[in-house]
Image 1: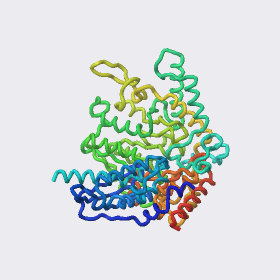
Image 2: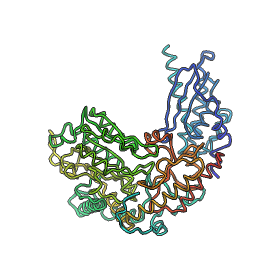
Image 3: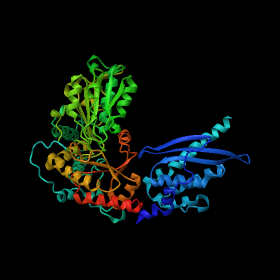
Length: 153
Length: 429
C-alpha cells in the first residue's frame, strides 16, 4: 500500500506528539500562514540569538491547525533547525524543499534533514506538498522579518 | 428534497448510465476502480457531451456571429441553438440566457453591472447602490456568491449584511423582517448549499425581497444540475449556474435574468460582439443577451452543454433528484452512523440535496481523503470554498461526498467502509 510510504510511523509519531509546540515568549517575529485550499493554519514565532557574530535560531514556537502531514512537518522542522545558525537552517530548508519537489526521486540527506527524510514518500503526492511546506514557509517568512528587525535596531 | 413536480418517479438504471461515462471504467490508485464522489466540484461527462463537442470542432468550427462563410453560419446556428436548448431546460426565454465562462463569472457579471450603473444612463438607475444601501447575502454561500458582493460594497460604499445559519446548517430566517428592509437593494442566496446540501426557501426570501423592492440573485450551481428548476416559479431575478457541474464541459456558465432587467442593465465585460456603434469618443451597446457576451463565444462548450441538457432530460430531472435523495439518505445513515463521525448540516433529506460533508474525530479531513483516495474513492476535503459556513458550524474543514446520476448504493457503502479504514489506520478506534 502506498499509504504507508506517505504515513511513515515517524511522521505519525510527530503528528501525535509534536515537538516544540506552543507559543513562547520572548520572540523576535510572529507570522500567521494559511493554506487557502484547505484552511489549515499555523501561527509561528522565531527567536534569534547571536552565535559568534552570526544570527542563529534560538527557538521556534508554533500553534498549528492542520493535517498530520503539516503538523509532523512543523514538528520535525523545529528539531532540525533549532540551535543552527540562520544560514545553516536556510540550507536545511532548501534541502527539504528540494526533497518535496522531487516526486519521490531525491535521495535526501539524513545528516541534514534528520527525521524529515521520512517525507520522501509524501513527495510522491503533489497535493500534499503544500501541507508539508506550511511550517517551513512560515519559518522562512518569520525569520526574514526578524532579521529585518535586527538590521533596523 | 427537490420538487419532483408530481411526476411518477422511475429509478435510474445506473448500469446503463455508467456505461455512458468512459472515465468511470478507469482504474485509479492501487488498481482500484474509480468511485467518483466529487461531482459537486465537477461532474463527469457522458459520451454524448464529448461527441457533441468533438462534432462541433470536427465539422462546424468557426467563430460564431462573424465570418461571411458557411462555417460561420453553422457555428452561429449551433451556438444559438444551444441557447434555445438551455433556456428550455430552465423554463426561460432564449433572450434571457447569457453565456458566461462560469457560474462565478455570471455572479460577478451582476455585481459589476451594479457598480457600473453609477456611470451608466438613467435607465440603469435601479441597479445603482451606494452608501446607505444594503447588499444581503447568507453565511452559507460559496465564496463565488459572497466575495463579489463584498467587493461590490467596497467599490460603492454599500453595506454588506447576511443571514446566519442554525446549528443544523439551515438558513436562520428569524430576523428576515429586520434584515430585508427598504435599504436592501439586492439579496444573493444559494439555491443549494455545496457543503450541507441545504435547500433554502428561495421563493419565500424572494417574496420578502421583492416586497421591499430588492433584486434577487440565486446561485444555482448546485441546484440546476440536481433538481428540476423552473425560473417561472423560482421567484428569482437572476440565476447563475455552470455547465461542468451538470455533465457539460468546463469553460461555460449561464446567467439567466429577467428580460426587463437585462434590457436596462449595464455591461460588465466589454469588447467585440457586444457593441452597437463604436467611435473613438465612445460606444453604444447591443441589447441583451449580446450586450453581456463580449468576445468570440465558447460555441463548442455551448453545444456540449446543450447535449448535457438533452441527457439530463432523457433521464428526467425528477428521477435524478429522487436517485440522489436515496443515495443521500443512505450516506447519512451509513457514514453518519459511524462512531466519531459528525455530519455537517441536516441529518434528514428534507429540503436537502446530495452533498454530505462530515468530520471524523481525531483525523484531519485531508488525511481521511488520502485514505479514501488509496481505495479509489474520490472526495473533496477542505472548506469547499465555503469558509464562513465551516466557521459557523464549528468545523475547521470537512470531507465531502457528493452524488450524481452515475453513483450507486455500493459506492456509498464503499465510502462508509473507507471512513472506517481511515479510523483503523490512524488508530482512532
